[in-house]
Image (cartoon, rainbow, N blue to C red; front, side):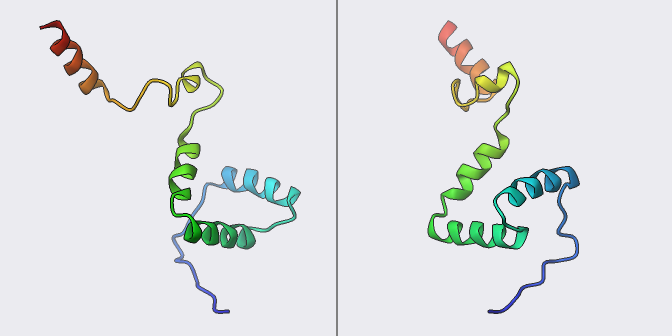
Length: 88
């Protein structure tokens, strides 16, 4: 099996790496195994990327986080435009 060297500017947030490292240690995995499993899963199911991205952006711990995916995806300008269209 060949190896691939990642570019030298491939950087992660240290705090995030420490948190993930603790979780992986509980599961008896290392980062290389984790990334290999992730890439294998993405090859089998590309929609996994969307799921992971959605989960990563999901806010937690705040009241507004409770409303994620409950209100919709419209932005402020669209809401304002539709409101004024309904008034006329």
